[in-house]
Length: 301
Image 1 (cartoon, rainbow, N blue to C red):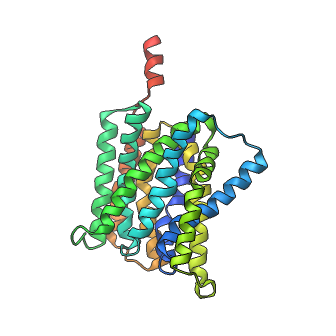
Image 2: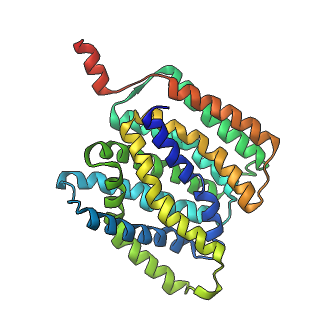
Image 3: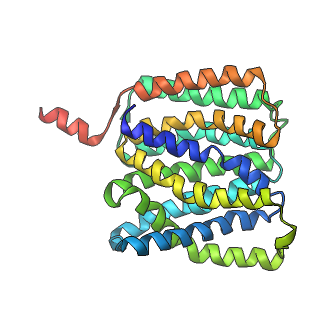
């Protein structure tokens, strides 16, 4: 397996637990605290890593792009999914993951000047359709459009933008540096929001179950921090549009974890859908993706 896809898969594996553990966390924590607090914990880890490695801050010209990453993956996606999962089961929330690969590829085309082939788009859209179809059917249907669905759709846009921009930035400053500086950039806002949550919804530490604490720890240390080390590394190797298709596997994994950890139903339909998704992902990653650099090299030769 090419290095970019391998790193991408490691990131996807880490992220696949995010929705189930977020679902557990918001049953006992205020969703505002889950969304902001995990970023504060992750930012503390980031500051420690930056201090130990004596990493210098990025050039001033890069900070607007770092804020874009922060807005997408530190603020947007965690907050929107935290509030959505108050009323939506994790298996239903997996729909958002099914749409992310196509959305990330679209942003990569617009932002990174990548040029996926027609076969790539066919495979990507087919994979997204397969994910949405089997996830909705396995959950008994949408039952009408709810606020949680709109929040999840917003999370797709936020994450896709943060993923694509972070992948491009990782080529300039390094994969783990991107998420570290994004967390640092967002930390003042996250600290304030965490404080607001604790004031409006005081936390009774003793009343929180170990399962909720472990879930919060996972989304803070893995989903919000370490998982991005691998994910942005994979996107940096790229092409971004191709590596992003590894996310087609994420809802399959998420549904499995939701069944095992939360006792949410896992039917034979899910297994059939999983085969369809894996087939589409395999086709997409094999399809040719041209970048501006490779196109220029081809013209020169």
